[in-house]
Amino acid sequence: MTQYKVIQGGQVMTLTISGESCRDSMSGEEFESKVEVILNDKVLHGCGRALHCQSLKQ
Image 1 (cartoon, rainbow, N blue to C red):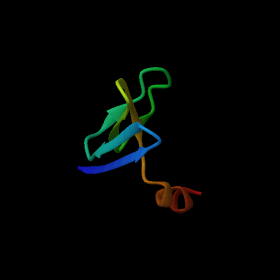
Image 2 (image 1 turned 90 degrees about the vertical axis):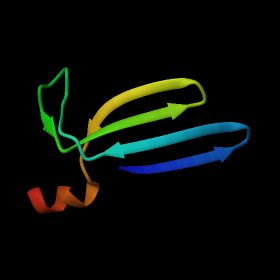
Image 3 (image 1 turned 60 degrees about the vertical axis):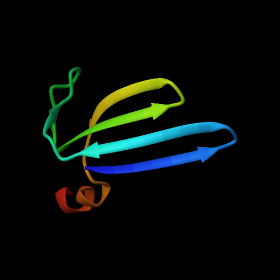
């Protein structure tokens, strides 16, 4: 698990990336990581992959 936290101008954002497989609920695409973003009190969940992997798949 990797976690980033940013505090600026009274706002707090936390990004957590965990190495668990994740399937996008709209496209059905499989991703290598689960992602959670918390901005102040709002929580967003999604899927993701490492950006450096994009050049390897092209």
